[in-house]
Length: 536
Image (cartoon, rainbow, N blue to C red; front, top):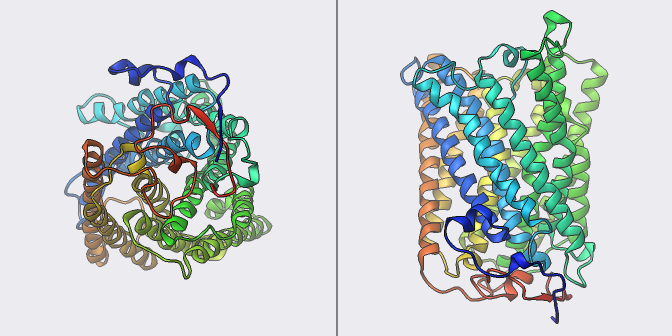
């Protein structure tokens, strides 16, 4: 590797601000990445606490803990917080921390925009939650209670908590779009000399495709919630059947964003996992170009299959056949990704440190989520399972492994020595993994069985025949919730001290980020690195 002096290195890169203003006005990608990850974790705990109240209610038949109207608010806020408040900011935090380092850039391309992208989030989170808190105090009608899909006509008739939700979604979407612009500009313009697009780390490919997808889909959702606001307060009837509107139009708008959103959460982790598997298998990544083309295919297909979520809303036979087959088509590039991941560690010199455990756990759990998704993609079978707990279990097998096991666990453990300069407690890390593995499966395998037995979702009470499985699911949820506290302990311990980490913390690690000291300097590269054939 050679190095050249960075030209045009902005003045904001010099000096190391301290105190509160460092975090308020910072333009450093590491500071902003840290704030994103802390915000995402706080929201994860908030949304997790809400769903634990739901699982406490569902521990046994009857109404014991919350009233039905509060139950509806809890599941609505849990969904919105987990997707928009936890999962997406976690991925953005990871991009901020690592993207400049893996492509050899001094910072994100638009650092002040980067600061704005983050500071839009906290007010949006307050807007989302404050009606719920005021409702608990007896003020107002409480938070949104429509389910995270915000279906009309419920969203048209809901209390003023829905207005707060609409503005919060606007702000969260704006933050995502600004962050996506930054990611794209950074990757296109600031790669190290010698790093062509086809030599770029898979990590960067995952985030590049995610950013393009977000810019494509988020404005559609913003337009939809604006139309909803117009229906609620300005006399329009876009979604109001009584005035000639069509409630199903909202479903089209929502799922045009909602289905690619699954891949918005997957693609960053699909870029992270090959790095971890390659490192702990002591082998080069298998099928680099095949993985890139698969991710491109997944991103492209994800925006033409949205209406498979709407089979039960009424659709022509031709429409059902189109959306069924096009949805199943995504399984082909996904299968290529899985084949490449398995081939990477096949006959490798594997060691099972915590990042590898979480990466393998992601492969297994997400694989199960994908296979059960084929059942719901079948137009005939979907009618049976769509509004049952089967869908809830599938949804969580698809989404929990990506942002939480992938971004918040595998990736954080992998790069934590580079971030803090200290090795984490391996025993506690493995305890974290096994608590997640046991808690997650104990929560959602019973929900598959409940769905197959016919238990509807989104109900606070149920028939006696579902008691035992619901009890198991609730016990699993509390174990899963406790696992996040172990994760917090591990990260805090590593940040405060411990065994010093070397520059290349892991024997098999490859990439530009491992060529700088641990912890990485506040301004990572004083001299721009030259990307070579051995640093992919």
